[in-house]
Each structure stands twice: as C-alpha cells, then as structure tokens.
Image 1: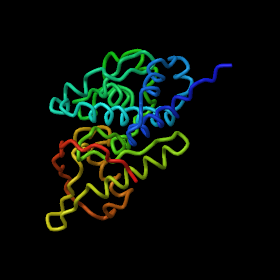
Image 2 (image 1 turned 45 degrees about the vertical axis):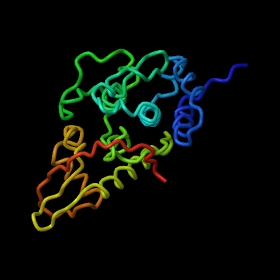
Image 3 (image 1 turned 180 degrees about the horizontal axis):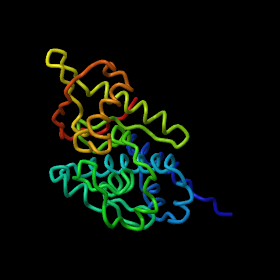
Length: 234
C-alpha cells in the first residue's frame, strides 16, 4: 500500500533541512514529482495555501542564495527566474509571491492592479483572499526582510499575527518632534495590499504602535538589500 505524501509537512521538512544544512534532495524531488491533483486536494483553503507556499518560498530563497550568492547582484533576474519546480511546473520566486500569495497581482503596481492572464497553475493554487500579513513572513534574503518561521495551517493566523506585530514594532520609528512615523519600505511598494495609508494607520493602531488619537504623517524607510541569510526566528 502506497502512502500519500504530506506536502505541507514536506515543505516544513525542506525548510528545516535548509536551516540545519542537511540534505534537501529528497524533499525537492518529492515536491517536483508531486501529483498536481493531490497537491490541490491537500491545499483546500487559504490556511493550507499560505503555510505551504510561505515555507516553499522561504526555503528555496535560502537554498538558492546560500549556493549561489552572486545571483543576488542581479535581483530582478533572480526573482523572475523559474528555478523552483513544484508538481512538474517551474516557478519563479515572483510567481509564488505575487501570483499565488498575492492573488495574481502585478508586481510593480503598488498592489492596485491584477494580472490580466494568470496561468492555470496560478489560478488553481492562489489564495482566495490576499492577506497583507504575508509581507511580514516572506524572506527574500535581504537584511530588511522579516525573520523566517515554519508555518502550519492549524495556527497560521496566530503565526502571521505575531510576525506582523513583531516586524512592525521592530521596524517602525516614530519621530515625536516632527510627528512622523517611518514605516518599512515594503508597505510603500505594496500599499494597495494595505488599503493605502488609511489602512496602514488602522494596522498601526491595531498593533498598538500608535494611539488612536494621534494624527501623524507616514513616510517610508529605505530598504537594506544587503544579503543576510539564516535569519530564522528563534
């Protein structure tokens, strides 16, 4: 009797193997050879999809850049290169981030425009609703990226809440003299995902970074693209 592979578990095992420097060959082969219909069955809701694809993205970014750090010098080429094979389909990091986890958003549209012609694979596996908290869970290898965690469907909501709260508290700076709050650059790049500056202010209130009564100006910090691998949450 053949046991069906648990692909979410494999995504976690792959990420762990990358972290400790163990062999990833078996996990990568299983993901590449995965049956697309079976994978679809194992990712029925956004909780499963977010957990699986966050683990896949973070694991492969660490794996690829630890082996070929020089590729980070041409970041656009690196993120658009279809170098991740899942269920027989070659995907780029951008395919996973903007196509699947951001629900077919155009990368450089500040989060306001959708792709006109997403692939069938993308339509099959993308989330139903864009969750802006994924921006605080995706690690692209830069020093300004949030730390990496192992995501699981059963507690993905709590995990993303923690990731968002921690990142915003660590990366937001409030100048009380000028009444200006400086936010991470990723919130500017994908401002449509956050509902514009109004949505950002609501998020800052939710996570107790500002008080409800405060009226302030939002500005954005520069992004530090220095390569910084192995940034795992302890």
